[in-house]
Image (cartoon, rainbow, N blue to C red; front, side, top):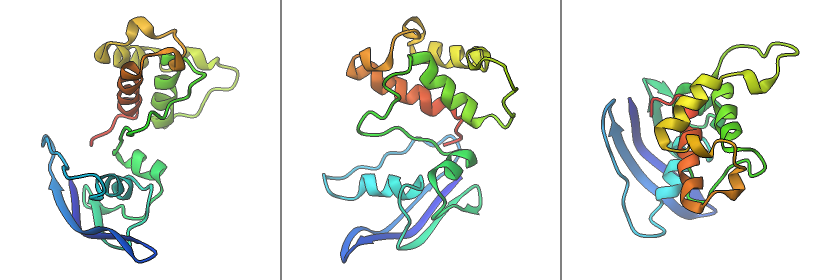
Length: 163
């Protein structure tokens, strides 16, 4: 499913990722571990299109995705959450997940149809699965830090990722 081979990333002579390789198959549970500064976050930035590799390959389901922008990596089926909370702070819990669900749908938005009526069932299902359904009407900035991290996972799930 995901194949990373000889991946390297350097910044002005500083080598942040040196010859990283990994293979993740469907159904695998994997972890990337290492001390602070080892390049773990940079590796995830490379895989998800936040950064472009200096060299090496990143393949997902046989397709080379190295260097694709994040929105195209997401459309191919890879999603993530971040170390630092990255939500729409003025939107509700429901709206944060709904945006993710709608961004992945390949339908065009119907003119004059209120956005609040779109993708409601799928958004509710995701919120129930992560335990945030009862907080769906809260503004995301009012959530505890732990619930904000859970909401980020719900947002990632809203894009229907395969990985």
